[in-house]
Image (tube, rainbow over the protein chains, first blue to last red):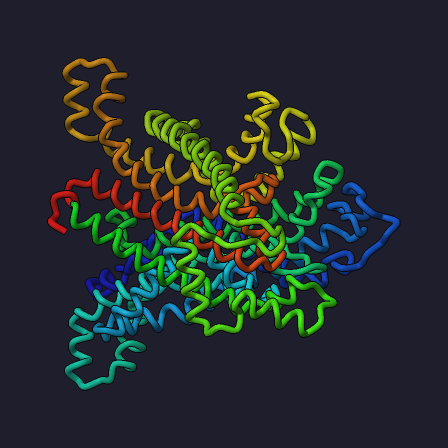
Amino acid sequence: MAELRAEANWVPASPVSRRQRLPTTLICGATIVLIVIALAIAAPWIAPYPYDEMQIMTRLKPPSFAHWFGTDDFGRDVLSRTLIGARLSLLMGLGATAFCLAIGVPLGLYAGYQRGRIEEFLMRSMDVLMSFPPILLGLLVLSVTTPVLWKTILAVGIVYVPAIVRLTRSVTLELAQEEFVLAARARGDGPAYILAREILPNAWPPIAVEASLRVTFAILLGAALSFLGMGAQPPSSDWGLMISEARAFVERAPWIALAPGIAMCVTVIGVNLLGDGLREVLDPRMRGGKGS
Amino acid sequence: MELYVAKRIATIAVILVIISGLIFGITQAMPGNVARMIAGQFATPDVIAAIQIKLGLNDPLLTQYWRWASGMLSGNLGQSLIMERPIGPMLRDALANSALLAAISIVLVTVVGVGLGIVAAIKHNSTLDHGISVFTFLGISVPEFFWGIVLILVFAGYLHWLPSGGAGNLSAGWAAWASHLVLPAATLTFSLIAHVSRMTRSSMLETLRSPYVLFARAKGLPERVVLFRHALRNALLPTITVLAIDVGLLIGGIVVVETVFSYPGLGRLLIFAIERHDLPLIQASILVIAAIYCFANLVADLLYAYFNPKIRYGGT
């Protein structure tokens, strides 16, 4: 009896203590990103003024109690515009990334698994797309159409398709040689089933890391295109567009440019930290021997 | 190595042909009729038809592409619709301005980036090291156009030290000419420096831990000789390849920076052309930029191959 009790006293180590501690970068990045997302979602309710309400009497007013971030040359409240702009910026980053994943992942899976001529053709097409500087490809696509935000999102998404295709293909190539894939083949599973149920679930960690990188690139490229006049159009409060419009008044009213600029930097730093942290967690090579 | 170079150049030729087809195809779909743009808003249909025949706009697309592409190859870049001037000289001047800005920036990125990387590696884990990594992290996270505007605000707006934009004229003196280049070059440098300094730092750290550096120190060589003659030489190999990749990134950044500072380069010319729907100018400038980008990448690959013995002797 005593022996039994002694055995019962043995408590297995709690799973939490064995689990790897989350990296600081991941926690900081996730916190910043969550705050930005929360502000973006709540923007229409917490913004003190409508983002496009013009008030001629309060043009170019410096930050004050009524207008925390001042007003622009149309008397619009810069704080409200910056808050609403967060929505557009996140929409750009996430939308473009979702688009390039939706196109790139299936193409990469297909190329890596089926091989052959179609793979060759696909990869050479990606080489051609990659031999364009990203911003130029975006400009070329947008120069043909009248610029609207959703077209910019698609253009930015297209720019990043080749990177996703290449990555997914190389991961698929490796996984296709694994035993569980060979077993599935031997069972007689079809390629679509194998790709969706066997390969994709194992291929996602590097794709997720790459996607987090793409979000910041997309936010920056989208803002640059809007800045150049090829993205969101007035009176939209896209950060890139706001900075572009503020250029003429930068010496008289620097707050119009500083507010969206700083907001964009904070967002990008947040996503960058999140991506770094994600890479540390998901990339086994960076774990440095500890953990499983 | 020769075979590798020949292969790469052949690939670039093919890619440029495809790109020129893409550019031509996409720009054909642009809104607005070229003939109408030349003739003006109130032109009669007869006039528009006459212009269309004169420019050969009714020919089959393939004929038009062939005319355009062979013109490009023979150096005849056509006529700008908006400025009504030949594109060749315009593009050449803009290219010279951009090349100057790019050259200054890449030299600055090299010198400052490698310098910061070395300092960070030597003072590993010190406050200075962390300061440098925060500074370079900001460089990647701040979009070029915002950083450019902040610089204009500080150095042109408040301090009045430097002009806020445009290009200087050499006839006004060296100082005035150079002062126009400071802010755009600083902006480009800041946005690119992180790659170089991070790479130099990590490869320098690795080299400093290697046995031959330990041996050099054990021999009693002065620290300066160990650092610069033994460690740095080998640590710089990966940096060189990163630097070459940065040349490609620089071409993208330059479009934005030239617009911020109203600097009369290739990027600003392209944006101007797109805004005004100046079809021939768009086609020519995009093709020129794409070609430069391809060759910059080629140089990057060749440098990589040259400095990496595994590839140099690899047989491909």
